[in-house]
Each structure stands twice: as structure tokens, then as C-alpha cells.
Length: 201
Image (cartoon, rainbow, N blue to C red; front, side, top):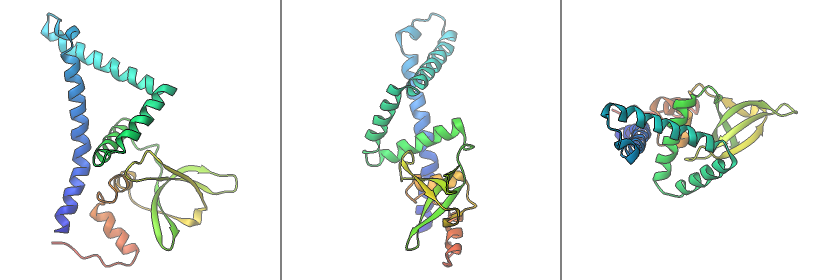
């Protein structure tokens, strides 16, 4: 029972952002294609490339706007509104992370680590590659499910443990609130803690 629920949750974490992203792109492109400016073009063969050109200009214009102070405020307010909508906030953040990962990749994201905060409680954080003047490492501790917010903390190198998991796996776990935990990672964590993990048939 637990196996199929976990598999279903993992599948939704992977498929939902892709489906939502493709749906939004198709919706925006369809809106542009039905604009009077595009539909009035006499040659049907020119409508598609013209719609693609308008779509590209719209994307570039929006990207330029996001690099301004006004764009930053708009994105902040949009994130705030979407993260107050139960259920939709997970889809929104998953879609946003999927697009950012597809466009920029994960080369700028540092290795995930496990940080023990108190009484054996561990949290997932990411190395930033930066250090303070007194030799402490700067870690980013994201919140779940909104990984665009979190805390920048200064930690001594011997106070956290590096993991052998991929950045994508750690982000999926945080983004899904733990429901997107892969079985391989769960078994590894159980072995690290000395917990016997039964095999589900």
C-alpha cells in the first residue's frame, strides 16, 4: 500500500510541473496566434513563424522587466499570492523550479548537506561555496514547499554532513515536503541511522 502511494507521489512530482509548463506555453501561444494582428496575415504559412516571433519578444520583454526593480516587486507579489493557495502552491513552485532548472541547469547549485540543528533533528541545506572571515561555511537552508525562500546560516565545517545525493533529489525532497523522497535515498538515510528498512513487495 505504501509503495504505490509513494510511487504515485513521485510520479506526480515529476509529471505535474512538465504538464503545467507545457499547458501554460500552449495557452499563451494559442492566445498570441488568435490575435487580430496574426489572424489577418493572408499567408497561412507566415502565421506560425510570426506567432513564434511575437512569443519570443514577449518572453524577452518579460525577462527584461524581471531584471528591474518593478519586475522584482511583481515576482515577489506573485510568489506571495501563489504560496497562499493550498495545493496550487506546490504546482506553482514545482513548475517554477522545473523551468529554472531546464534553462539555467544546476551548475550553480552547490552540494546538498544534512545539518543537525538540535536533539538529533536534521535538515536539508545547500553549500554556497562561501565562507565567513572566521572560517565558517555559508549554507542556504530552504523552506518547504517554497524553495525560493529560506535562511542563510553560518556553520562550522564539522557541524554538518555532506551527502552523496544529487542536487535534484534534495530539491525534490524539500519541494514536495518529503513526499517526493526516492526509495534509494530513503533506504540510504535509514542505513545511516541504523534503521532496518523492509523491502516492499
